[in-house]
Image 1 (cartoon, rainbow, N blue to C red):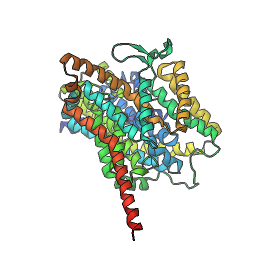
Image 2 (cartoon, rainbow, N blue to C red):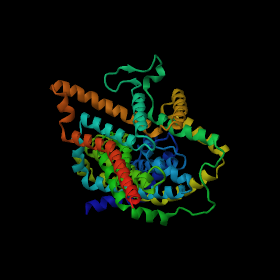
Image 3 (spheres, rainbow, N blue to C red):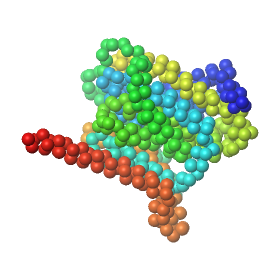
Length: 507
């Protein structure tokens, strides 16, 4: 009974207005390249200091929810992920937009985001204390293998060549080593330049590798950016719902994967969306259609990365360990409000906690009408803006977004250089996704490896440290499966086709 009373507190006019405002602001900010969910939450934290704790948390949670979803807009319509967790959305979202189904892709993203977000919130409400214990089982070695697993996924999902995917991931890992080492403080690959001491900023690299090649291609080709068929079809909600119902198992599986990955602090939506995309492709009847505009790819990635919102709050609230970077900012706001994480949040401060969870549920539900409304006008705007205006506008946003991250003009120069390099590599079949994921997962892998190496050397058994735990062995097995399964499957298909051809030719 008390749970219902606390949950109804989220329906007060003030909390409703804050949730609506937060989701709207989050969608707009998340759709702009460079303005990530972390930045959106961090900028608006001071605004919440004068609010009641539950109202402040509802607004921050709503901004977070909206920003993670908003990243899909630019991923689908401009092939530039608004947030790192939307990287995998570009795989099928942008090809859909290129063939004239951008409005459908946005609708599918909205539906999947709502489903994933609701699964994550329900997991937070029902399973938080239990699932938080899973996060405690992961040590440095497990995080190292988890990062390797993420790298094998993105490399194996490369469209043209698995070898080129691995080479791109290796280049991303090399970029992640620039600057001061994560452990030890060694200075590497700066060549005496103070600019490189801070390393290659992840979001700046993401903007450069994804956005600049698109801008160059827009200028170089006379054709329209997106296909326009002249038929006004609105948001195509019925068509999107039919596809979502058909792929209901894909939605639920991806949302579950996203929730599980988010429980592991530091894993984030990038790994979650990649794992779910890989799994959706593995079980699909036509895996070759993924990467060419398959709607199920959009459903898988968006359900997973939005499930990380609720899932990431599980270790944040129960253990005080942020599941994702925005969770770290919200945790700081919690501490400023005078609250401490732990079991007391569900006992002593149960009123505030359950009101916040209900507010997060409400914000996720608001994604549906707001996302469809904003997405409809976003699609119409992108296809109606002439190139002469679209290219300078996107270029301006990329420069401003990159500069705003660390207030550094050097980041803008690095972004432009990586963008030109990315365009050249694209011409030779090297996609940006493996490079960006290598850059994101590199520090996680390095920190886990160095700490595991020190632990193994201290215990006298390096092999047992890295290969002795059941969790490590499971992740290693999954990594090997992700690498070799596509090869084995391709050989089976080739043999099957050969038998079919020989059987038809024998009579």
